[in-house]
Amino acid sequence: MIKDILVKVVGVTFLNPDGSSRQEVIAQIKPSDFVELRRDYNNPYDSNAIAVYFENQQVGYVNKEDAKLLSVLWDAGSVLSAVASEVGSFEGRNYLHILVSEMGEE
Image 1 (cartoon, one colour):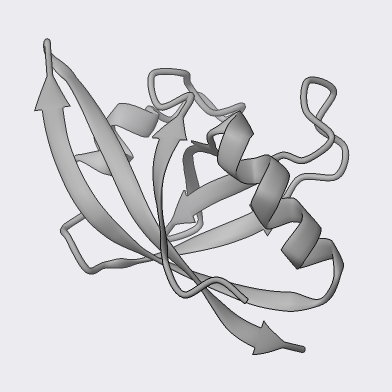
Image 2 (cartoon, rainbow, N blue to C red):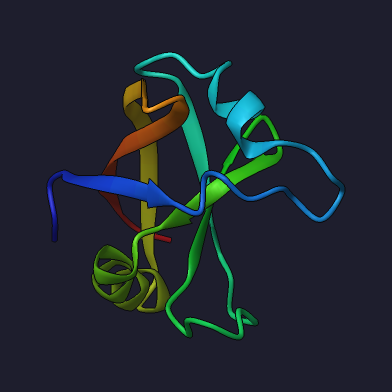
């Protein structure tokens, strides 16, 4: 069981399929806000993909390295919880780091 893992959210500069800006959504997030993790089993680029959402809008994905570990826990029935840890801007682009915790099993 993991206690907490600090995760960089990637893909934050892309637009969502509905045209909404992930950058604009991230700008609304404050540290300690809850974010939702959703396992993306149909992702053609990463079979371990875990998407990150805030208020039902996607802001990106758990980075590939951490998704590899977390997807194993998820698929084994663990419940994962996440909160915004660091929200900021670098070179004019917003970024997001989240703190993921394993809450036990369903």
